[in-house]
Length: 80
Image (tube, rainbow, N blue to C red):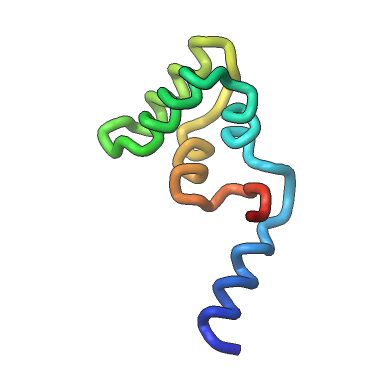
């Protein structure tokens, strides 16, 4: 098996439920989703700060590692 096949297999093997951050983003209004996308893409925003802001709005109670896992793409997302 070549590297491309190994990487393709890895992409589709994440077990478990879909990522909570992904689910949250599905339920946000367009403006809030854009703001969260921008914060997630900004390396100056720490995962803990994003988690605190989400919790302050009563949207979810994430830990920094959940935010950072989503940022890295290591979360369980829908196959594309």
